[in-house]
Each structure stands twice: as structure tokens, then as C-alpha cells.
Amino acid sequence: MSEIYNVGIIGGGVSGVVTALQLAENGIDSILFEQENSVVNGPPFCHLHAGGNLYPDISEAQCRILMKQSIEMAKLFPQSIDERPTFISVPKSEKYSLDNIEHRLEMLVAYYSELIAEDPSNAILGAPKEYYKIYTKEDLATLANRPAIARPKSADEWMINTIHLIDYTKLKTPVILVQEFGWNLFRLGAQAQLALSKTEKCSLKTNTNVSSIKDVSHDNLGYNWEIHTEDEIYKVKYLVNSCGFKTGTFDESLHLNSERLIEFKAAYVSKWQPIPGLIPELIFHGERGTPHGMTQLTPYCDDYYQIHGMTNDITLFEHGLVQSKDNMSQPEFDAGITQKLDYGWDTEEIKSRTENAIDSVAKYIPSFQSAQVGGPPLYGAQQIPGNDPSLRVGEVSFPCKSYARSEIVKASSALTVANQILTKMQEEDIIPAIKTLLNSSTLLDSISKMDIDILARELAIERGYPEALSRLVIEKE
Image: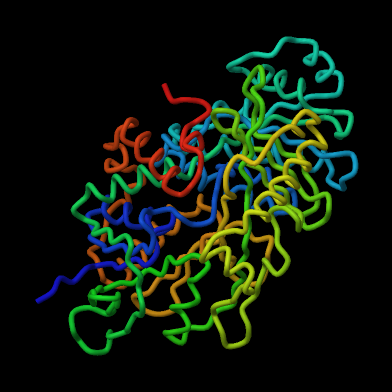
């Protein structure tokens, strides 16, 4: 008799791998299907979002959830966290109120303090009183007279390096430095793949395309689902649909209709001149989709920088946000976006959009105009459950018995989803009751920094990116 697995997971993105790892950590076997050569190939992420400070329009409730979930994920994958701060500013041309931003930060400090009181290991962002620091126009003028610091260690040192480059006369004051860290997808993917390959509790099937699934729960076979690939049928008791923006494809095959959006986005890789000292991630807020949409500059090693520009000629795309239609679960992109997802980009479009991104940064950092294309874009599509495109916290739904649909919007939600699935499996008697769900991972902890370094570098190069993108700006001790 062929093997029966407790759980079958379709999709090896962040949610799929964290679910498989959490199952293994709690003694539950699974089989994980990923169509690419390695895991975590989905939409790019570069930022932990520990507080939602990149989203001035979302609710305080979403900000608190993002902070809690980001801390949980950072504790799981410390070797993927770049512990450098983020500079938050509002150009004079934009509507956002600094008073509202400061009020939200005060709320986040109080909430962060509560999380640390519950569990001291949650203090991964430093002391709550140092979560953010405000700089007035006078403060900036004073710091501008101090020399750059190659490896900054204090908030003021990070701000000194920043203010040497930025034309702060274009910004409202005060400006803010906040402990929102970077997050390296190549390193997370490497650590997850190494851990999954090591455990006997997960059968990892890369380069494997699932062609169909069949509900056999009424046939009394001892399992509930058959997962069909090109050359084999796999039997599982519980099914996790973790297919990201393609989640609706399998829903439709099961006649499970649900409302969702899918969105295509891209970030651009640039190469700049050497500068005297490290800088934080830089955020210049602006209204999404307008010509002044937010500009985000993320520093990497060896003078590489990733750029988001929330305008239609940079990160956003015409017809890039698509809603599901009546009686259909899977929205469909147009031919141009589908071409990018399936076959890659036209060279001229890479050049033009990266140059547009560089221009958006140069509005605030004049010397950045000398930056050049540094590699192909980081791109992908994400799902957003429901019909609210501003939603940044998605989790999981259970549309029928023995079936979970992962609906994460941000990578930080992955552990929450995994634990909700484990809880639901216990309720349905798929697995025995677990006294306490483990949120630490001996599996992940067993993977050495050296092995992560090596595989992360290989993943970056294999996917066509500079190997510098696989390294942390702030190396772990």
C-alpha cells in the first residue's frame, strides 16, 4: 500500500514552508509540493514590517498584528533579519500628517512593551524606548555638520549618514528613525530548504507540478485527498492550499468560490557608487498610485539597492490589480503580466522601469542619479482575500472539512497561519491533541550560518540576481 501522509501542502512559498516546518516541529508528517527548483520563489519581500510603518493608511489594529507576527517570524529566522533601521519621512507635497504618524508610533511602543512583558524574548527590536527617534529641522542641521560613520551603531549615527545624502528641504519635519528591520528572502529560503531537507517529517518535492486534486473523503479510504502530479498520485488526510496568487485555481476545481484580489508588483535592483557610511532603509511617503507614490530605497551589500516606487510606471502596473469575477475564484492577469510571470521581462522594460525608479529616488537624493541598472527586477504576484486592496494582514480560511486555504498577504503572517492549521487539524481529529504548540524551531536552529550563507548565495545566482543580495548589511555576531 502506498504511503498516506497526514498533510499535503501545495506551494513552497513562505506560508507553505513555515507550515511544513511547524508541522515537523510538532511531530506531524507532511509532503510539500513546489513547482520551482527551490522554495520561497514568490513575491519579493525585503522588510520585516514590525509595526506597519510603510503603510500610513492602514488601521492601528493591522499595525499591531504586523508587529506581533513580524516578531514571531524574526525569532524563527534570525539569520534572515538585517538589523538596520528605517528612515520615515513625508515630502512637503504629500497629505500625510506627521502628528498621526507620531501617535501611531506611541501606540506601537506601548504594544511592543506589552509583548515584551508577556515574553522577554520578544525584545528583538531593542528597548521599547528606542523603537523610534524623532529629528527636528534643527536636529538635522546639527547632524549634517558631523562626519559620516562607516558602521553606524546609534540612531544618531545612522541619521548622520542619511542627512549627508538627502535634500531634507523637500521634506516635512520632523523626520523619524524607527526600528523596522530588513528581511532577506534568499536567506529565509535557504534556511527553510535546508531544514526541510534535513527532517524525516517532511517529504519535499521540488520541480513538481500538481495537476489536480480529488476529494475522496466520502470513500472511507483512510485518507481524504488525492494529489495528482505528472507521474504519481499522493494520498493525504489533510490538504493545505498555499499557492499564493494561484490559490483560486484549486478552489475552482473543488467548486469553492471565494472573493479575492491578486496583484502584480515589482522592485528594481540598482547599483550605485560607494558612499562613506551605511544608510538605513529610506521611505518617502506618498499616495499610492499617484505620480508621487511612496519611494522606498533598501540597501544591500556591495553598493546594491532595491527600489520600490508606488506609481504606475515603477512598482505598480496598469491592470496589475485584478478582482475575481462572479462564480470564479481565480482572477486572471492580462497577457502582458502573464508573460512576465511565466517567461520573464523584456530587456527594454527592465531598463526603463529601473531608470524611472532611480529618478524617483534622485528627487530626494540628488547624487543617486548616477545609479544604474544592477540586475533583473524582483517581482511576483500576491493574493489579497476579499475586496479591500489596502488589506495587509491575511491569514487562513477553512472552506470545507480537511482543507485549509492560506491567504497571507505579508510573509510575516506565515507562522500564525501554520498554528491555525495545526489547531484546526486537532479539532477535526486528523492529529492527536498537542498540549502546547511550539513556536521555536530546533530544526531551523540546527542549520549553521555557513550553510545558510552558501545556499542563499546559490539561490540568488541561480535566479539571476547579484550574490550581494543574499548577504546581510549588518552581519550577525
